[in-house]
Image (cartoon, rainbow, N blue to C red):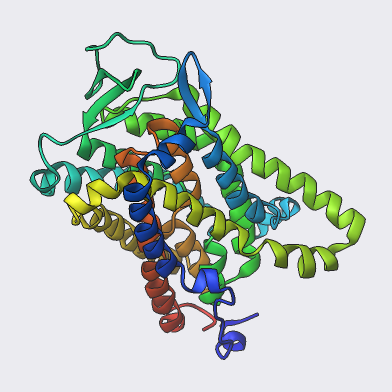
Amino acid sequence: MSTNDIAGDDRKMTSVFERYLTLWVFLCIIVGIALGKIAPGFARYLDGMAIHVKGAPVVSIPIAICLFFMMYPIMVKIDFGSVIRAGKSGRPVFLTLFVNWCIKPFTMYGIALFFLGTLFYQFIGPDATDLVKMPFGLDLPVGAKHGAGTVVMADGVKMMEIPLWRSYLAGCILLGIAPCTAMVLVWGYLARGNDGLTLIMVAINSLTMLVLYGVLGGFLLGMGRLPVPWQALLLSILIYVALPLLAGYLSRRWIISAKGETWFKEKFLHVLTPITIIALLLTLVLLFSFKGEVIISNPLTILWIAIPLFIQTVFIFTLGYGLAGKLKLSYEDAAPSAMIGASNHFEVAIATATMLFGLSSGAALATVVGVLIEVPVMLILVKICTNTQHWFKGS
């Protein structure tokens, strides 16, 4: 289908959850903060429902359940057989992989480090600290130094006390190494892009994350003098990516075999549509119930985090869209190639930040800010795409 064929195709978000996601996130902030005030022990109780190793909480069971239901509806949509056919779209696939894994993680680190560690350092607070989990498998005595952190005892559990801005940096890093595999399906659709290519890239990114997410995450966290919980990173990938990936693959095969592809697409997927967003919003309520005091005492906190995330999103989109033009891609391939790099897999980033650093950490808050700005910024970029179709061949 050419761009001329779809020029009059007025594509819109059909789901009320997707269309008003920014509003829902704001409501979650209000509900979460109110919950933290009314029942301050509730979120702590839920976060305490965890799988413990050597007395330390490693996997938050409520967050793990929420993330599975965030991820499964996405993974079950993917026809992994299409990955084999990806060679027919060699240039857009190569472009997306190059931007996502060779450029984006490092620019996110550099931009966040400059803004949070230099430009906004005084605003965040030179003496402001954050308590994060001890790296899984590490047993240091109280008072010991590890990177930029110090081991302290909090509520009978050993924790790491690190500068608050570095905790925010950790959240930005986890966003930067998580290329989108969920909402990008919406952004590509709205931009009138090649939906088939978008699905192929979702499948490839999901598989690539199994290998590169932990490697890049550990490397960049180490560069930021943050705790590098290699074992927890591996566990996070297995729980939050591999498990829903495998469940989606197996259940898709079984359901199509038993009920047929038409029933699968028209009935089963229709029921699943709102589940991802509902699970995400429940997770956000938990996170903000812990971070309410920080936000109330310093309401500009979200702004300090949002600015580098916004700049990173626009930069990566501009780079991907510009390179797509240089490679002479069609508009239908250029739009999703740029979108998938610009948007983030905030579901995995939130869960990983929670597992590695804790539900109440600044890292978890930073990943939530990624959700907050995702919808309005990506809708602006969608509009830019649809208004610049004529820049590409065949337009």
